[in-house]
Image 1: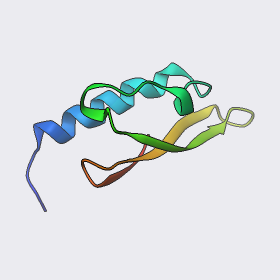
Image 2: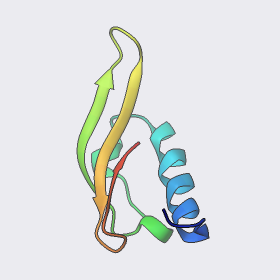
Image 3: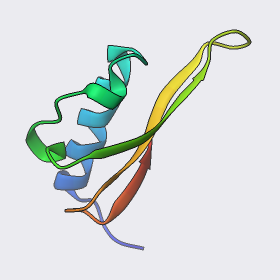
Length: 68
């Protein structure tokens, strides 16, 4: 297990904030700052049943996959 990373925390906070922009903007979002090279791959939406909304993608510079 690795320790706390402020860079990883900043990435997570930035992506979490962008999740509130709405499902119609995820695939066309202008990614800036610590997530400037983020590549969205899938929109998550199930608003009919439980209002679930988010996205999946990867960050090449961090070699990480994110489900937000």
